[in-house]
Every structure is written in C-alpha cells, then in structure tokens.
Image 1 (cartoon, helix red, strand yellow):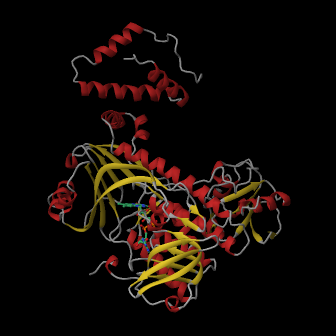
Image 2 (cartoon, chains in turn purple, orange; image 1 turned 60 degrees about the vertical axis):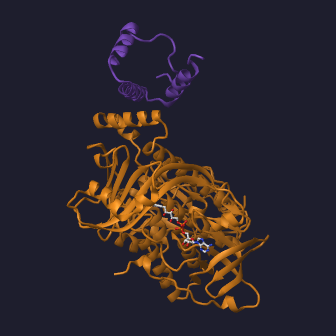
Image 3 (cartoon, rainbow over the protein chains, first blue to last red; image 1 turned 90 degrees about the vertical axis):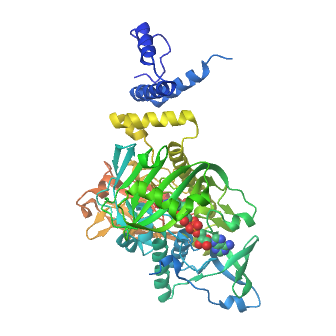
Length: 68
Length: 536
Ligand SMILES: Cc1cc2nc3c(=O)[nH]c(=O)nc-3n(C[C@H](O)[C@H](O)[C@H](O)COP(=O)(O)OP(=O)(O)OC[C@H]3O[C@@H](n4cnc5c(N)ncnc54)[C@H](O)[C@@H]3O)c2cc1C
C-alpha cells in the first residue's frame, strides 16, 4: 500500500458523499455536530491507520484553510 | 492505633560528626529519606560504599502518596534484598476498567509474563513502602553495613567544590558541617538542593485540582483499577478507585480549575463527595486527604559537578501512569554501581555523565506519557474535550477506539537505546534483550534468572563457551553459564536467543544489557566492558 496521501479525486461518488455528510448534520445543535465530526475523524483515521498518511492529511488540512 | 506515618522511625541522635573540630568527609551523602534516597543508600551500602542519609524529618511519608509499584522496581528491590517483603505486603492486581458516564467502555489486563518472578504491579502505601526500606536498612546495619540515616538533619546550605561538596546541616542541637565526595540530592519535587544551587525545573503545569483521599472501608469491590470519565457522581470530571492493603482504598476525584481548596478539604465536604461515589450506606473512615495540582517538569541536567539529582528532585510527573517513584527507583539502580566504580577509581568520573544521559532519556519518556494522559483526562480546550469525548463514545461501540482511551499509561521499564555505554547489537535475537534493555526474567528451576544477575558485571553465556571470568582495567565480568535446557518453559530461549543457536551477553550491575553476540570474542567483549564503564 502506498504511504502517500491521495490528493487526486478518489471518491466513488463525490456529490453523494458531500450530501450525506451535510445531511448528517441537518438540524443538529452545534455541539452535537462537532461531536459527530470528531467521531467521524477517528473512524476514518483508524481505517487509514498509516501514521505517515495521517500526518500528511493533518498538514494538508492545516495548509488549505481559507486565509482571512 | 497510631499510624506508621505518625511515629518517628529514625529519631534524631547526636552524630560524632557534630563534635569533630573539622568537617568529616564521607564518600556519599544522600539528602532525603524518601523512596529514592533510601533505595540509593541501600544499593550503595550493599556494595560496600559508606553512605549517610540526611532527612529533615524522622518518619515516613505523611499519608499515602504513591500506591502502584511496577515490576521493574520490584526486581530492583529484589536485588536490594526487600522485593519479596514488598510483594508480601502489597495487593496484586492486573485488571483495569474504564467507565464513561454509567457505561464500562474499556477493560485492560496487564499481561503477566510467564516465568517472571514478580507481578506486573502491586499496590502498597508509600508509607509502608518506605517502612520496608527502613527495615531493610536496620537489617543491614545489624550485620555491620556502612549505612546511616540521620533524622531531623536538615540541609541548609551547600557549597560545590571541584572534588567534593560541603553541607551545612541544621539539627535540634544546632548546626554542623560535613563534606561528601559525592552528593545525591533525593530531596523531592521542591528540592531545596536545586534551589540552593540556583537550578531550574521546567515543564508544564496543569491547572485542574484533584482531591486525593485514602479511605478505610470494608468493601467487596475487586482489586482492580477503576477509572471514570464524567460519572454521575462527579459530573464533567474524572474519578479513580484503587485498592491498597489493610482495607484502604485510594480515591481520586477531579475537581476542576477554580476551586476553593480550603473549603473542599474540610472533612464534611469531602464526605459528601465520597458518599456520592460510594453510596449512602457505605461505611468508611477517612485516613488521609489532600488536594493536588500536577506538573510534568525536569531539570535540564541531573549531574552538576559532584552533585547528582535523583527521583522527584530531578523530574516530576503527574501520577497517572504511576511513573514517579517507579522511575526514581530506576534512577537509584542506575546511580549506585556507577558511583561505586568511580569512588573505587575503576571508572572515570565522566561515567556519571551517562547517569544523566540514560535517566534523562527515561524522564522524557515518562513525562511524554504522563503529559498525554493528563491532557486526555483534563482537556485544555473545548476542542480537545470534543475529541476526547468522541474517543470515549466510540470506544463503547468499537474496539478500534479503545487504545485511544488514555486514563494513564502505566510505568514500564526504560530501555537505554542509544546510550554511550551500549555496544552495537551483534546478535540476531529478539528486541526485548537488545543492548540497553533491562534483562527480562526467566525461570531456572526453583530460582529465577534475575536472582543471578546484578551488582557485578556478568557474562551470560547460553549454549556458548567463554572463560569463567575476565578482567579489563580493574573491572571483572564473571561468567554465568546457562543452556536453553535449564529452562524447560523456553522463556530464556524465547527472550534471549529467538532463532539464534547461542548467545553471549555482557550484563551491567543494574541488570541492563551492555552488549551481545553469538559467541565469546575476547577483544569484542573487552571493548564492550570498557565502553560500559565509560572508558571508550
Ligand atoms: C497523589 C500522588 C500519587 C502518586 N502515586 C504514585 C504511584 O502510584 N506510583 C509511583 O511510582 N509514584 C507515585 N507518586 C509519586 C511519588 O510519590 C514520588 O515520585 C516519590 O515520593 C518520589 O520520591 P523521592 O524519594 O524522590 O522524593 P520524596 O518522597 O518527596 O522524598 C524527599 C525527602 O527529602 C526530604 N528533604 C527535603 N528537603 C530536605 C532538606 N533540606 N534536608 C533534609 N531532607 C530533606 C523530605 O523530608 C523527604 O523525606 C504519586 C504522587 C502523588 C502526589
């Protein structure tokens, strides 16, 4: 398995996933939403497992925020 | 009945040193009769080094601080002649449970290693622990060992010189001066020695307060470590329940940041909190209660000229993980044999720098683990709390999240990877016995391997030839000849050989591996012994 974070399009169903994620938060209080996101991060991270990939993901997330 | 911590165990008596015109010089003076000072002194005196301990008090630790003692310190105490007494008096346990709100989310079991003499952990009150060490000292004194504890001898001033340290000591009968070739400062987290020498103690201070109580109660909770996150009886905070001997139970209750300590400490308020936890019907007496905040700090260097810092004076951790006294005992283990060689002129003074390197490495490992646990238990931002709670919620449903739950990573022995005393690994055998590792135990008939190692350099041969001993520049390594057949459980083979047909190990007086190779190769092992004594 490659230990490089995939940064090219890789989702089977991009619109579908975005929609499912947004809907999962419909009607939730902010705190419940935050908790949901946090659980999701850990589930996905565990699936990836490889620390090198996770480190790259963390960096990519840190470096791609909208500058205000 | 008065408690052991209420009676003087080493009452003040006048020392002849106080009546000498000139300051008397001792090879080693230790400041502090806590677990670390006592253990260091026993180790040195057992090796024939005259040792004086000075303590400003005359009794064991007030109340119980440390309770969990791990296998490696018990092995060290076996070498010091009092491990069995500790295990006999302690409570053994091997299961930990973690609860979140009202649900159990996680259970762990400390793996008992087959063939090891000592259990993974015992619980024992720190005051009993210290009492057993003092009893050991009395036993040694009875047969003439050169060891002395001077109660109510408070060190007031320290003067560092090139080849000795001068101490001004205050007693109930006035002050006197003594000198030491080497000083070991085991004077605790607030180390006056550190302060007197103007040395820093840096790290992270945590803001949460914890109520720590020992209660005496007849209860049939099992002897397991129970840890709660956000329980109904202590909302938004954590709690811990752990058994000690004599029906004493340790309770930790997190209280949060801004609290009124004096109010919280009042017995009536403590009782309300304890009843909420233990139930209205529980019958118990409060033995001891205190409120703590925790910090993880260390000195930059543990050696300053002829002064060595050991235990809490050198490094302090939060108690989650039981790494305080447990690591302090590993400091003692590391200091004693080195100091002996240096004092006898068999190793250069710079050998003591390896004490700093090896134990600072251990301290960093302990600080890292204790800091992470404390941050998990007391999240410092809203987002850390959200992430923490996500882990706890997930752990109740999915096994994958359980290793992320951190209620304390319990003390494990330190392997001195990269130490300047190690020789390069020259044996294709398991990692647990690589150079720098503390030797894992193995059964040998009615005895155990560790009972045959320590205090001197040992050349352990497993199905290999070697001379009965060899001497290199004044230091002798004595052979211990074994065969894999000596241990039918094959623990010895599994840990020390793996697939290798034979092995030769050079083992330090503190039972750590210095070098290993498939066969005895004289130049190689001579060089290894020089290296392990700071001569290469
Ligand atoms: C609530 C709590 C729970 C803990 N639980 C655990 C645990 O489960 N397991 C574990 O391993 N550790 C635990 N610890 C940590 C453990 O208590 C310490 O690491 C340990 O006591 C350190 O031993 P020490 O000998 O270095 O210092 P100390 O025990 O602090 O001893 C220092 C000694 O120096 C003496 N002294 C100080 N100044 C002078 C002076 N000027 N002159 C002469 N003498 C002086 C003092 O009187 C004292 O006797 C816990 C700590 C706390 C607070």
